[in-house]
Amino acid sequence: MKNSSWKISLACLAAAGFAAPSVASAADAAGKVQLTFVRSALPSGAIEFPEDRNGKLKVKAGPSTKDGDSGYVTQIAGNAKLTCPPNDEKGVCGPKGSPVTAVAVQNWNVLGVIPVEVTQRILVEKGKIVFASTGKNKANASSNASASVLYGTALKWGEATLNNLGPDPENPVSGCDGSPTLIGKTDCIGGEIAVAGFVWGIDNNPSCSTDAECVAGGSDTLICIGGNCEIQTCTDYTDCNSGSCNTTTNNCCDPATAVDPSQCDGPPPSPSGAFLDNAQF
Image 1: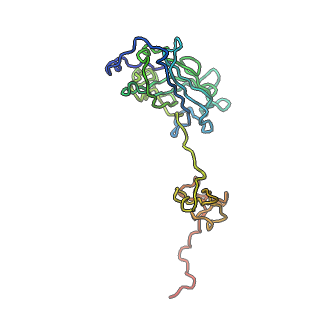
Image 2 (image 1 turned 90 degrees about the vertical axis):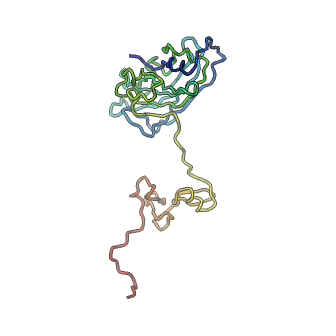
Image 3 (image 1 turned 135 degrees about the vertical axis):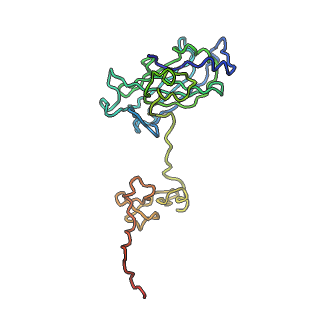
């Protein structure tokens, strides 16, 4: 079984009018990429990336002038403590000696016109990741007979993901050893585990001078206190601009945006058919 798909299509590159430099010098090797993994927004599959480990795993990639690396090295650094319930051992995925196979995916662009998808099998053991090709958290292009075609060439980095293994990784076309110029090798690449990116932050205390500025920011549960928008406190719904109070947290809430709308206590419903006080006939 092969461990990675690096074989850049020589025919494809030649068709683009690209010829490999005959000599690559150390001066050609420049630039590095480092990205942080976070849990996928749409995780699916057996292996999972715990939300409390966001940012604890990084992918690093760049040039190498070391003999045997064929010009490139990549590393997955850190410990995400991946899980794969119900098959965890001591809370993490992959019992010692019985790793679970997954796949690391990198998308590049060569010469600005040729999209390339590199898939590398990874092994998850005791929650940690190593490359199947090396047994370490680093891999290079030494197994890629075509790597020399890229010597001295600038590559555009697109994205990186960690994925569960697809349904037929040995498929010669759409499996893990399919052509890198085939984008979306569905038999190799299964459900997403993590993406190299970041989790959008939360501005809990935007500045303000009036309550209206806080409401304009998109929340009617905030009021302006001391120059910052703060959550309005309450004892019942009459205290709240939003008309609803969470009497457990004593914070105003909005049923339309609350995680649990049932906790937002609003005014009691008017009894059906009630008589009007002092009604005039």
